[in-house]
Amino acid sequence: MRRRDAICVMCLVPLLAQNAAPPRAARADEREAITPTDAPIVLFNGKDLTDWYVWMKDTGTSDPRSVFSVRDGLLHVSGDGLGGLTTEKAYRDYHLIAEWKWGTRTWKNREKSTRDSGILVHGIGPDGGYSGTWLCSFESQIIEGGCGDFIVVAGNLADGSPAPLKLTAEIELDRDGETVWKRGGERRTFEKGRVNWFGRDPDWKDELGFRGAQDVEKRAGEWNRHEVICDGPRIINIINGTVVNEAVEVSPAAGKIQIQTELAEILFRKIELRPLNRTAR
Image 1 (cartoon, rainbow, N blue to C red):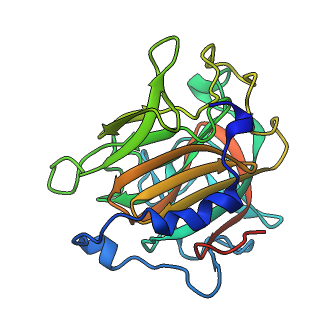
Image 2: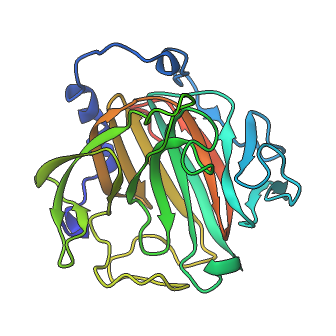
């Protein structure tokens, strides 16, 4: 799929309700999840980290290095370590809008590698369920050259059993055999691994500042609009107005939201959840 074939967001959203899957038995965390209805849920208020908590792989719920802080109305993620900023509550059926830009700092063994972060949705299980670091969830990837990739962040529940995560996507294999989203392609179900966005450069390199020929994210230091539509068992990733990836038959269909720290500095000026089928500005 080429960029010019990307589906207009305003045309796509009304179709979601028509294609919704039949109701299914809800998991406990899904039953408790909150849905925005009449007004947006503002997750980041520009003042403090109310309604969020920190989880770091090395320090747990403490943040002695101030990896996550609020400065001049922005959420500042220093990138100094691995972990995430996690919502206290679970959510379902929403249109997430985040506005972010890269900072200048990269850390440790990724000082010369692509800047890397992510927005995790439908997070379930214990903190650090994936390798002691992130919630078991579905990642809407933020990485230079790969914004909008899906990653199934598979891990374990509190009892040690595998977290029941799965998603289905229409895909093709690129020149190197990597999985890429293609509308109308082969339908394949994933319980781990990734689905690249449709225009990811097959010559992608893990090097600082990488840009591919079709990249839709802005250059480092410029603001991006990152949208994640979660509508029942469907997730759609949108970067700067372009639909770049879609998953269906997603399970679970609700959970916590987590903003990653993954050894790169990133700043957010907006994180909010809007009701579905409402124009987002």
